Image (tube, rainbow, N blue to C red; front, side):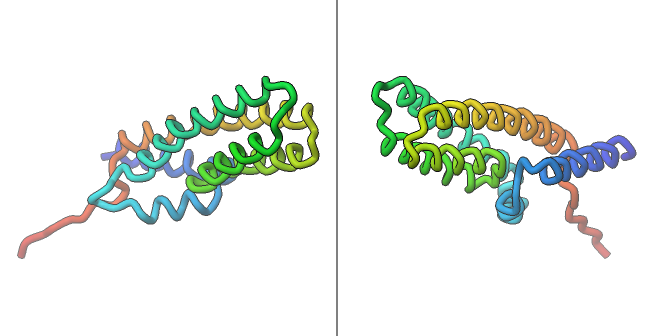
Length: 152
């Protein structure tokens, strides 16, 4: 029982650090509120879908950044979609980099786009690693509150 309590404390600490370090925002809480006994891994499943889908956005943006001349409208469209996807899971730092990329796109700033995209990919990778660790511990700890039935 003590081990389980320690795991729950670790999970709570990891979760809090995601917020304290600015990696996730209140949208992450909104996702958590949708999770219940019927869908105990809902948040992890949504985040996994995000990472599966976002790989396509990153690939498309990478390829578009190699084109000469750059098609800023296409880049802005890809990034707009990626930002929406990032917002849906509360990926705060990723979303901030998406916004900055779009500012550079609209200004026609090639170097700004490339530099910001590299930073975005770093933030994306760090968040992915942090969430993987968080979900791993959360699975090990199990539900934080279990319904108990005591017959009379």
